[in-house]
Length: 429
Image (cartoon, rainbow, N blue to C red):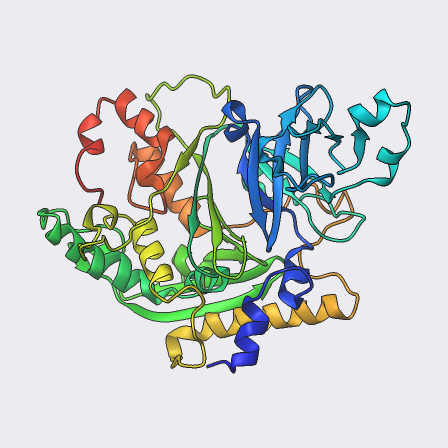
């Protein structure tokens, strides 16, 4: 249980708040590169700040305040130029730093100096493997972390996203809770399959001969990059990768399983969720080389206007998780919670947040801020899920049940190429 003050401290993320200042120390994903292909200007709300992301005609990316300094017109309607973004109202043009670099009428009257004193907010952005990252913190900006999954060349990538109407913290806390997998992703999943008319499709993950496995021990360790989560099931022991390897929660807001799940605070009540996943394609499935990394939208499982439940969206882990996050309310009331032995990881994560929040308040750098290029060359993040999925790929298996994989265009195309289009019809399991 937290006090109301502690809950507010961990969940408020706007400018000037302690948690907002911590989150601004990190490069945060805000879009997939391909999303700017058809619409080169996008409205972005990040950490309580309203911005626009654009790609100009030279290919340069910019992230600037969403209002023109002149008459406060919204720049989502701005015109990308050979350099910068032009306001549609009177033609004022801004570069990627937010500096005004052209005022057409003032120049027509012979004045060319006022523009130099006009600036809107501007923040650095960078692309990595089809994702666009932004940094809203103090300068100089740190290096973009070279996490292992971004450094691979022998896989196929795709990127999924959705906006989840709740605070980031309850999403992250789910990742520090191994026991929910046993219940939500097995018992409830099998119930959802029965409701969908397919009781024969019992989940095989975390089950043995159709009987769900039980957790007998969970463990958590703080390591260089965050927290490692471990488990022992009733048919595994301390020699199984579930325990010897586990998988990491990368501080402050990334879960790694077979891919990365980023939970990016939009504001106190909404969160961008990004699935960045590499896929190993089984031998014999011939996919063409990727010219660009695709993006897909993940639907939200919400109760319908007539009270109907969204069962077709609840046959996969991602949909089940999203349902749990949303139903805690837009900001979970942690003054009313009753934590138990299964919540050790949740408590540890909150402690780590507090410790790093206090570091920033003391003027120190928090965990996972990298400035030395040699130190940042490659950060390996072991995950038992990736080891086990690699074994599945060698067997020729492709699963659509984990994360947001139900909607993955790469997996769908691989199944079609393998002649298994039937796997794309009906519930996933």
